[in-house]
Amino acid sequence: MPRRSRPFLVAILIGLAAEALFLWGVTIPSKIVFDEIHYVPAARALLALSGPVNTEHPLLAKEFIAAGIALFGDNALGWRFFSTVAGAATVSGVFAILWQLYRRMRPAVTGAIFALLNFTIYIEARIAMIDPFLAVFTIWGIAAMLWAMRAPPGKVWTRWIVAAMLFGLAVAAKWAAVPYVAWAGLGFVIVRWRDAVRARRPLATMLSGRDQPHWAGLPTIPALLAFGLASVAIYLLTFAPAFLYHDQPLTLADLLPFQMTMYREQVQVLPHHTYQSAWWTWPLIIRPIWYFYETSDGAMRGILMIGNPVIMWGGLIAVLACAWGWLRARDVRLLFAAGLWTASYLIWAIIPKSLGFYYYYYLPSIFLCIALAAAFDHFARGKFAHWDEGFAILAFGIAVYFFPIISAAALPGVQAFQHWMWFPSWP
Image 1 (cartoon, rainbow, N blue to C red):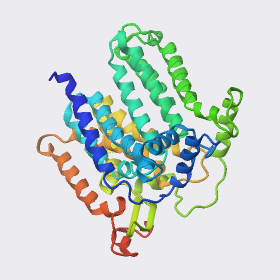
Image 2: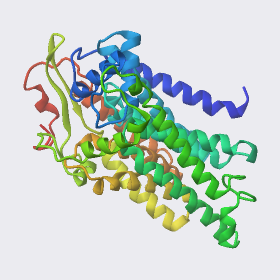
Image 3: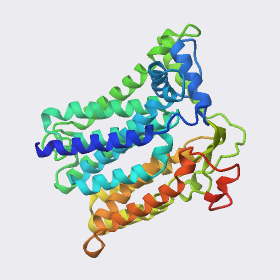
């Protein structure tokens, strides 16, 4: 087998392993869980084309849920099947990002293992919410940007448009992806500027596509325009089913004004919620969320939306280590790894939401896995060379410990959850 096909094969195998894990027991609980109460009815309405439901969010994620119901029936497997696929593809996407950065198997596989063990992907992959689809398209959009970065001139435009479309699909799943489209464009410009400075060329040359070490053959301004147009076009195309509603069908004249309606619903002031939390508390896991805790399918069961403490807290150290490593070694891969988490997390400090919830930390929690892999690759040398393996074993041990309350396993009684409550703010 040619060497160049190996990363693709490994990514596929990792995705299949993740899919098997996520599918196992996915139909329990067999009843609606947490925010499925919003998205499953919206998916049913889409299938029936009855009319607009859950209008504060775009349609794409609910279209995937509807597709699952069409394939497997209006049951737990139908609701959640495509979430499992999105989760598995997200794990493979972490591998793809790290492979594009390092072109070596160890950091790419290590990051994918951390992603598989970080809890948040596992939990979100087993519930019919919109965040799994936000994450998978964002992660693969980043991977495609890096893929285009090294493309030969004859292929760069195709890869660039693929990246733009993936980011557009991420926004079509949830508007929280909008900042990532901006980060992608800004990152492109910064790399072009850096390349011009390093080559001691006039800054005006950064606008040209000729003789560029990254995205060769891609002129800057046309590339940014094409990126914006492609992402917006694919976003708007996902509203096609709304034109077929029996009640209040969307029209071309209504399409853009409807975006303002969505915005107003997004920023409305909501009443206090038991599980609300401030953005600054999420990295510390101060207030996780019980997605489910009640009797179902013959036993007491619970699903606690929480990150693996080893990865969540260790990842914060890794972000700092990556930033420090970049300052000392000027390895731009370390800056990229630290910047991914920082940018994805700090946007929540400015997004105009009246309430915050721990699951908003979903994408930043995934980027911690990339920072961990990058930090271990840079610092774990010599006698520390196998620290990444030890860290993975520790994360796996914690995953086994928490597994009963992230997988809806049968619990011995109503108070069983107390066994896992490390802090007073967790129940």
